[in-house]
Length: 344
Ligand SMILES: Nc1ncnc2c1ncn2[C@@H]1O[C@H](COP(=O)(O)OP(=O)(O)OP(=O)(O)O)[C@@H](O)[C@H]1O
Ligand SMILES: [Mg+2]
Image 1 (cartoon, helix red, strand yellow):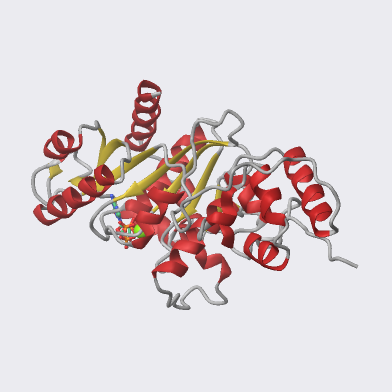
Image 2: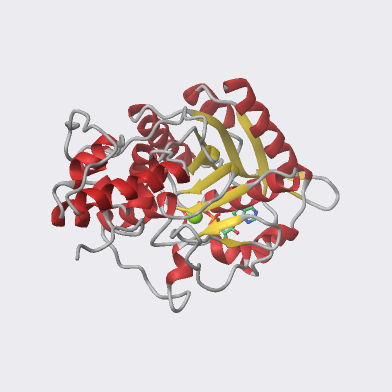
């Protein structure tokens, strides 16, 4: 008796074992079999990527099982897609998108506060009653789970995907740290594995309905940022910088990379812009602001200039980022929302 094809099976394994299923995938508008990247996904993951409704996924499975048994299927094969090996690019225009906007947080340089800006933007947006997810795209140096104090391992969801962990404040979080036995275990992975994990975090995680999915990226212009920009339906990119000359130079590289990959920069955040004493005196510890220069370079607005606040570091380290409140971050969230409204 033929085995039953289920949603958690990998497309590549199915088409290798049952070549008759290729035409079923194509007939259902899933060209994943022709794509070296997409074929490594599960059926459920491929369906999510292509915005399938649960009914459409069910029909696909019925047809796949019929093809395996040599029975007639409900779809006529469309012309097989060309372009084997081209990364999967997804359309962001689909109306049945469960995640309304995917926003990536980037910078050319390490340690300028990408993860912190990602975390606090998520917190401020959540305070406005929005549904927020945070995907930790820093696979080898994850910090998001620690910041939100989530513990435990993600479980399998009802749809056969992965259930993200939820923070105290209701933010859905997915990070590589959740899969390590010890938080300090190193993830010694090469680029393709890192890219695969990021795609899985997007495709195989049951994010549910989200207003914004924020993707925290590792520094630089390497595999991980490229994967996110090329394989996820990113609607906009926030660039984080700090007022150091070197930061500006490397951030320029980052802006140029986004341009090359046809991404849209929705705003610049200047972090560690100043330190304010209890008396209200401001000191520009890392030098004068270069926000205006970056605005000129990127053509995107300056969303916020954030101060250095030692209490913030403590809360992040203690997994209590959601307890932090500062009007500056509320302003960041408001500017962010308004900028996206204008862009839409
Ligand atoms: N405005 C700030 N005030 C105080 N501490 C800050 C501020 N911004 C960042 N930090 C601290 O600086 C450190 C680096 O920040 P963070 O991890 O967010 O940077 P990153 O750009 O994500 O780094 P990486 O490139 O390694 O991913 C953290 O300990 C963070 O808590
Ligand atoms: Mg980081």
